[in-house]
Amino acid sequence: MTVVDRSLQQIQSSEDVVRVRQLARARAIAQGFSLVDQTKLVTAASELARNTLEYGGGGEVLVEVLNDGSRRGVRLTFSDQGPGIADIDLALKDGFTTGAGLGLGLSGARRLSNEFSIDSRLGQGTRVAITRWR
Amino acid sequence: MDKIPILRMGRFLLVTIQVDMHDRLALQLQDDLTERIVKDRAHGVLIDISSLEVVDSFIGRMISNIAAMARVLDARTVVVGMQPAVAITLVELGLSLEGVRTALDVDKGMALLRDEVQAAGRV
Image (cartoon, rainbow over all chains, first blue to last red; front, side, top):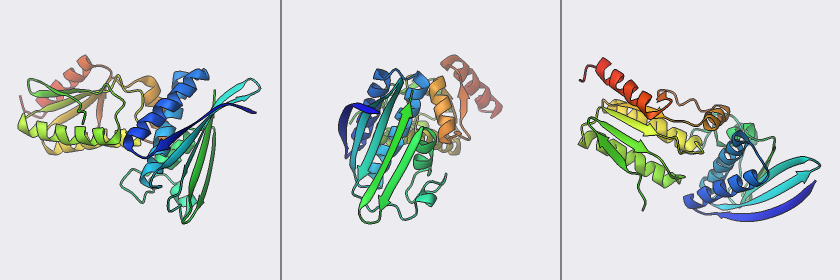
């Protein structure tokens, strides 16, 4: 698998969340994603970018364009230096939230992605990576 | 700050969301619409989302909130024009927009609003 392009986007404001959506959309289009696949990736990106902002206190996303044989994909890695997640299994449950939202962000983003990984340390931060293939 | 325009058509308010909304803009729209329902004594709200390419859980919640607030203020809400890719994604995300009436386009949405308002005995 080769990473053919990578770009970094800061996430410090709700305008930045919009920029993350636009960047994810541009990469998905460049990789030839169908409209439904574009929409799923962009929606997952929006949920995770908002989590980075609201719960992580801001952070960044690394957007990578992947080629794997004939497969074309986009990987998004969100990282923050926030408080971390105490119970990841609980955080991945539909409807669980410590904030004011619906508790669908993390679980929904996982459903909308082909690959999903999460790494969180209390007091150090959280990293969530998703990949969607065409 | 930018604002999403709210148009008045008789007893109805019409909102067409044409920009990729950031969260504060969505909250602003929620507040503005609630105020306008009271100020204009509106019986119905029609929200056209045909230009929206993404409806995530935040925007979904805003739509549900608007419908709920409108109901408390004795107005009906209809959401029209959702793109198929958005509908597919919304369901997979886990959002069902409960309590929100939908229609395929503005014409059908207006007809639905008129029916609802008539059924509520307000015409």
